[in-house]
Image (tube, rainbow over all chains, first blue to last red; front, side, top):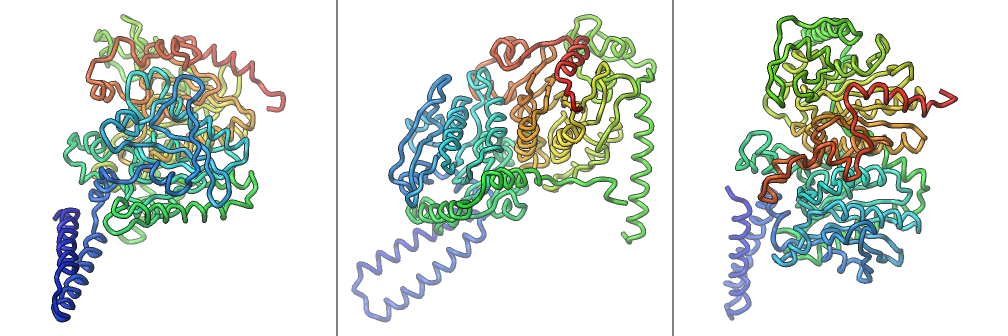
Length: 320
Length: 294
């Protein structure tokens, strides 16, 4: 039933087996039968992982050990210079922004940042930005445009923060402004959903030329819990909601909402963060190469067309 | 179903649709026909009001002055010059991309009871003689929620205005993005905002009029992107709904929070305008922005 639990069990078995292999001075025959068992376990593991349900992916995306934006930034770029503040109200630490280089080329990075400890999460407001976070992001995007730097955004948020101050300072306007301004940026924009892409709060960093998702990340109109509570008046039906919402990378690439899925190691990004980061890096480099020679007008038009075409409807006049 | 049956069904659908539009049209054109003997309750002071009286008072409560929610066709009637409105894109229909149970039934019933096919109506019109393209959300249709059809029609509104070289006026009234269409609805926020940015770059004027309620994904996209933003008195306008905020912060919200007057004082809208004053104001603004080449 619970695929993730099975994966945990298999991992336990593997660990025990490898300890045995390392410690015992068994003869060749036992050793080779150990190897057989190991192969079987591996097969099981891959089998189970291919059967991960959308709800399993929701859990992986929210896994406490899942790498956060700064883990990727530090691994991929190394020379990141962080820049703070929206110049209007304050610095929102749930969004990190700055300049770095990749392959010798300068880029602007904007990333939603969750914490790993309670203390960090309070500082980062659990990755839920206020309007000033979105306005900082916009300031840095405009700066990137001025200096002709491509923009890479990392999306990881349960959603924009629903609080008094956020409303008072125009959360809706801040998100809308980002959607509006991002659509006309003359530099290439790549958005990567690394874990949780929740609602308008995620979209406000994702009006991009290309949108990529990590294999076990999610991107949706609302959390599955919220969705179940609105549609079925029952938030405990979150796993059912996850099934119908088309929130996995695999669902979203089929309907052209995203362009690419970035592979994660078996067991999830947190199992081998370094490998995951390398995969992300490769995807970024490919993106930058693809857009290197593109004109400003092409960049704007390609992005416009991507979003202009999204929608599922029919017209009565088409039926005749 | 055979191909012939399918074709017949489509024909019946279309005839039904045409019939409905025919019934609706006189109302839009300003003939004061309203079913007699209907009473309704004011949602604010709960006074029992005669529907006709309410209608003749621009759907404002005769007792307490509450601006009662207005259907799209009534809003068009109230705002545009008689016989000037010409609807576009009335035949857009939603699909059920996530296969949500009962969604299609719900839409069908709403279509029957409201006489419109979706939660948004748009077309060309004149306001005090000035040409414009006007779009109106209908909060009686699934809370005016934005799915693929609303997103596409809002986008078309700006394309139509570009083609006609006239300003856009949109009356918003919406609970936000439409849950039943999931990620497609979320993407309509990006789609509409993208179109508005293009329209704006071309020098087009866009006036948004926020009415009760305007929340969620609509607030976080086209509602707040007007060059000029007007709101009706006491309209609820916000990103997160009041209930969600109360749950998050664990306290009740102060009186007047997220209402038009609050947003005015915080600097997010240009004006709070009484319903009866909206048409004259729009007329003036359109005249001020009249283009010599239009």
